[in-house]
Image 1 (cartoon, rainbow, N blue to C red):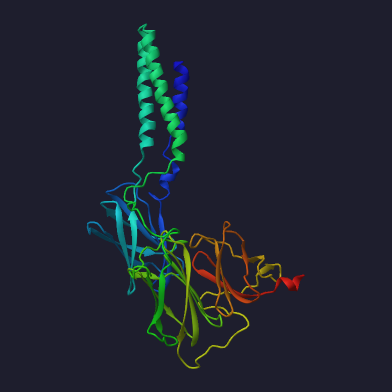
Image 2: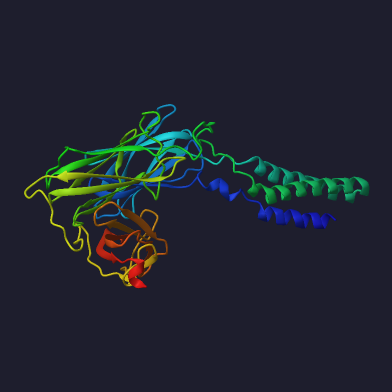
Length: 432
């Protein structure tokens, strides 16, 4: 009997480990894309396992920059304690190591060039669970009772030895039951998580944010830098919306295109104040431009904000083109493979193109396909979900017949490649 209990204890010890769900947020890295100082970067806040303890912050560059210094400042919202450092943005970044003293809400301030962003985040540490205490406590108690049973049996007291063995069996049973059933229970909130608050909000979560999109100055001039500003407000309270969640490694994805498709930017604005996002741009041609912003509120859902603005200059309108030309900078003309060759509205189509060696994930994906209707009323954004390889493959259903402007984006070792093309979509009746 004692030998059987020892074998069971060994097996349970080999299986015992904290529930995987506890590591979903606590200890995980946070990655946030930013367009700052003219560079596309991803800020990485490494997960920490203890406080007080080290917090490492790095800046991965996706465009050629030679050691762009980024000043980082971390401030605890609860006590105001601030620590500072410097991270060098590069394809293989050098991390700044800071010391944090507590869990909970913090703000990360980033400064590069003459731009500054303030990103809210939480320092989370896994506090363990009552299940862990029962597992290891039960096994420890079983081990003590087993040793006691062995010693008692050697002194010819079989009744006492059997009682101790039964106690050991009970301890092992409790530990085994916790191991089996704990994954079915909701994980304990990590230390530093936002408090759970009872809400009286309408079923379905929080409402979409109301957005106001403008440029500063109001009418940018061609060739001059301007700021695209997005102010987000909660329509039910009138307060700034400051509860955006990281969606595909960014607080917001902004797509800016000229009406003719010659100009294309996929950027990630900086949070400069509660409810305010800003990104600096420059357009070399006058005319009408379209801005689409993808964002998501906590306990709400993804939403798409659309607006337009005009860039002034010689010749107040851009000429419409039959296909988007190479965007500036970093565009590469491609001829993708379409299946079927002429997509049908409302039916899935496959878009495939060859990628060079060395493609690396960007925004958590191998590739991005952005599709805009020619009139600008529709914008679609889908991802290549496979592992990096020689082919990028996307599946997309075009909503209506007509001409669409499309751009595929992927990252290589030193830059983000943008490949433009057009797609003509036919009606279901035309293929019958």
